[in-house]
Amino acid sequence: MKRLLLITERFPPDLGGLASSAARLVATLCQLGIEIDVLTWSRFLQPGEVLPPETQETSLFQSHVYRIGLYRHWDMTMPHTLNVLEWLHQTRAYDAVWGHYLFPSGFLATWFAALQGLPSTVSARGNDIDREMFPPGDFARLQWTLQHAQVITAVSADMSRKIRILCGRDDVLVLKNAVDVEMFSPLTPQAVETGDVIRQKASLGISPEEVVLGFCGELREKKGQQFLLNALTTVRTSAPACLLIIGEVRSSQESVLEFYAAQYPENAQRIIVTGHLTNKAAVAEHLRLCDVYLQPSLWEGMPNALLEAMACGCCCIASDAGGIPEVISHGENGFLLPRSHLHKLGEAILECLAMPPEEKSRICSAASDRILNEFSLVQEKLQLQTVIDRLQIFS
View (cartoon, rainbow, N blue to C red):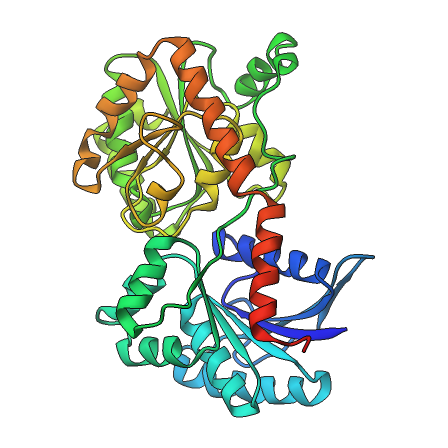
C-alpha cells in the first residue's frame, strides 16, 4: 500500500470547514487504496510536544494522526515540525506529501517534499490566496509554493483563476467540496406529518409561528456576522423571527453580540446558538428547520455549510464571494446578493418569504438536485483519483 503524508493546520476534533474537509479527504483517499498519515498542530499541547499517533482503521480506512504543540510563533514551529517530518519519513517512508491549505501547510509540504525528492500537492481551500497575497501575508512564500508544488488543486474555478494569474500555471485542478447526500437530504413528508419538526423547534425554544433564519459554522467577521444581525432586526419588524446559529461564535467576536444585545435586547433574545455539533446527522436536522439559510460571506472558497444546506433543500441566500456563484444560480436554486449590497440582506429575506409556496418548493428542489449531481462524495472520489494519477505515486 502506498503511503501519503497530509499536513493540515486543523483536523477533527478541531472546528471549521478546513478540519471537516481534511477528514473527508483522508477517508476518501483511504478508499482509493492509500494509507494516510496526518500531521496537524494543536494549541492545547505544550510547545513542541508530539503526541503518540492516533490510529483509526476499518476495512476501508486506515490513518495515523500526529499532533504537534504549537510554539508562539511560526519561526519556531516550522523548524521543529521539519525535524518531526524527517523522523516520520525515516520511519514511515512516504510516497507523496499533501498540504491542505496554502499556508502554513502547503508551504511546509512543498518544502519538505522538495528536500526529500518526493512529489507534492497543495490544496487552496478558502481565503488562503487573498489572505497571503496582501500584508501581513507573505507574498513571496505564497508564490514559491504555487510554483514548486507538483500538483495544485483549488476548491473553486474562481480560486483556480487567481492562481493562474499569480504564477502562470494552467494545470490547476478544481477539486470541489463534497457532501454526504444520504445524510444531508431534504425534509421528508413523514417528519412533517408526525410533528417531528415542531417538537425539535420547541426543544430549541422556537415557536411554530417564528421564521427561522439559519447560519451554520463558526460565526465571525468574514462570514458576515454584522449583516446577519442587521437582517434579523429588519425581518423582526415585519414578522416573528429567530436567528439559529448551528455552531459557535468565535470568542473574539462575542463582543459584537454583546453590543447588539445592548442596542436590541428583545432581538438578541431570539439568537439561538447550538454550540459545536460533532454529529453530522444533528447538523442536518437543524438545517432542515431553517426557513431561509444565509451565507453573507465577505470572502470564501466553496463553503461546506452552504452545500450542506442546499443538499437539505434549504432556500438559500448567499453573497457572491469566491466560488459561491459556481453553485448558486440566482433565482434557479437559490439567491445571490452582491457583497456591495449585503446591507440589504433583510429585504432580500422578506422578498424570499413572500414567494408563492410552489415557487419556493421549486427552488429548494433544484438546490438539492444540484448538490446531488455535482457535489456528492462519488464526484469527489473521481476528482481525487485524478490528483493521485498526476502525482504518479502508483507508477
